[in-house]
Length: 535
Image (cartoon, rainbow, N blue to C red; front, side):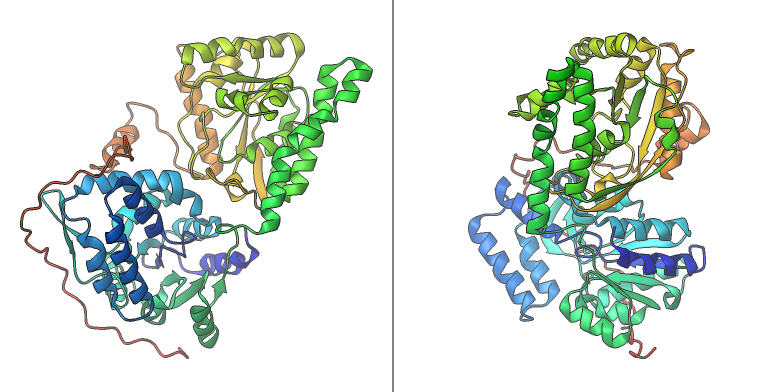
């Protein structure tokens, strides 16, 4: 995480607690690297919602907007006309799908840290963006932000009419939206925070008490310098450097030469175990050095208290392989998805190193494939490392736990050791090839005895262990089923939370749009007078 975020975190910590403090974030370029609209336009082209001729008209409008020849509302009018007749739910689902597959990995870890810091102070946190809700809301939900004010598209009978609701959330529209948010909680924007990357937001930056230029454009950097506004730029997302790409390739392929380096030990001693232990340690140090990965570990003594054991970790990143090797070092067996077996050379190397490949889609096959791991723990004293979420999550938010690791510990009669990895996504979020330099915080919790576990009580034990992770990560715990909290949590779920898109390759559903009655826009407030630069 960039060191430039630290003064901003200190300023948040020094601010008053409570919802009367508003913390407002722009979205594109501020919370995420780049522009979410690009992902949407690319997908519109791929699905056939946007013809090439339409795309050229859209590109011309965006160019004219960038040159100052067309206003934002005019550009949106051009953009939205191509959506006429498309069902809104199609784009709700598309937004969820694109967040999972493309946008989640663009979220700056530093921006997430700023949002978390404001939430921890009880501040009213909101996103005010000129983008549409379909671009912003999935990310806001993942970040724990309830207040989202965006440019709205007109919908009639569940279908886009091709019109944009005015006023749009741009320029003065953002100031108006911020005032509405502040009024709703009794806040004064003189005490609020606003984070943005662009001079497009200069009106609101000048209107709020604590403006911050985050990942600023050159123009905003100059304005911030003239007004003595805090600035911070992050390199944790976006286009990697050539050096980072080369180091990432080297770290990935280092698995092969480091395991080859163990062959002489096997030849001399006849012990595959000692050869594998040597290779695991060498791989951990080599890959960590190439990535520039450091670990900050608490509870390290728990790694060695009771072995063999089933070590379980929350899975955010492909860097977890390197982190696991660096933590556990020796006498280990592991589990990998069946697809890894097909990878040239690397798949074979991992199998030789004791990794059992399982078919995650076939539960019966997976359980049968786990038997060698039970034997390795009982007969050879080896430990096993598993990710109970089953796959990498797209954010630090903990996913549901599967039962495999817990069944394994019960069958082998060994304890479970929870390994909580806080920020492996800083190194390589899901979907990114490149590793980036980072310090990853790890907390190893005390071993959990499984000797009195039974199949009947297993669900309770899994919930208890998962809550250990949640407490350590500072996330809300999973309530016991049937309790008032569990029922309240169920009721609190968004009523129209979209299901995942079943097939994003299908063309968006279009229905003839009935003539729409324009939605009544909220009455605009009087234009805000920007504060003087000196104030």
